[in-house]
Image 1 (cartoon, rainbow, N blue to C red):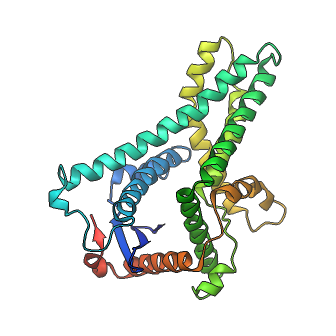
Image 2 (image 1 turned 180 degrees about the vertical axis):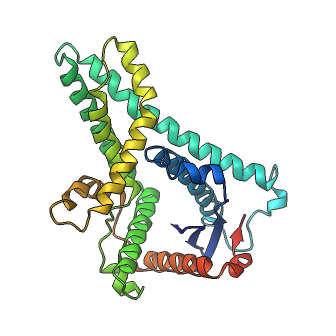
Length: 295
């Protein structure tokens, strides 16, 4: 999946070896556009929006996974209207993200508190809490990366990064050129996830950890604050990635991508190239949109 200024496009490999596309035109919402220009607020808006849009694309891919072209369920036969289905998928995607964020935020708090006798004090508790959060994140990513399905998803993730790196290097988008690129990229959402752990640790030093109930409350209330700051940190590390002295600031996020991306196969790279080329085509020539699956 690739996104441009006005459109997002997904390409998938069908079981007959053909490539199918899904297109989504980003709606113009003046209020959101204004919010996207406000530092710290824009990150939260972008996360919610991208989660909803990404859920639509994943739904398209899931509906056609291992299904022979022509045998898809006819939309009119599906329960509910298409609009209800689309909104439902987007809402579930956003709620799933928020639930996951709550889990990864609160579980480390309880684990750190359980060891308060051995690691007392505010500084020790925050460091322990952040350590548990990092361990939980890395363990989760490692375990799911061992499953065949997620491994394949991570291979496509790597293919996306390789295509972007090839395009930014101004090289022709051929399988050979793309495969020669790194599967890591500074603007990846995986980097953002790690930055929330690091940023959260520093933010927590500015609020009390006692009593315990207040610690739980402030961790929940600080979730949007941490997300907003982390987004700005991600933007900043991307802006300085070409400066030798400062490019190391983005390294922690790149290291995490060693888990969230895998080296893709040539046929997966072909799909990624097809998706990116289709996005460029749609952005430049919107009249081709009716030829794609879209809403």
